[in-house]
Length: 96
Image (cartoon, one colour):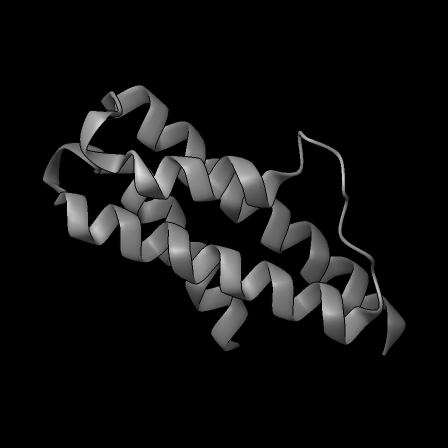
């Protein structure tokens, strides 16, 4: 399993166990997701969106507000991050 695939699995597991995560763990996972998405976008030549609804903005806000999010909002943010990374991985793997 690649590092990216392992990270996607980690995000999904975390999303299924949000009640067991600390605020620090949630923020760390979301911050790692942001870094991973930026890196994958750069490597694949996919330009980031400059729209106000770019997923990176949503993930950054969720990371900063982790202590005030409901379990459902945390789960949704982690699933969104995993989905974007999975999509980028598919696109990246298809280019190789």
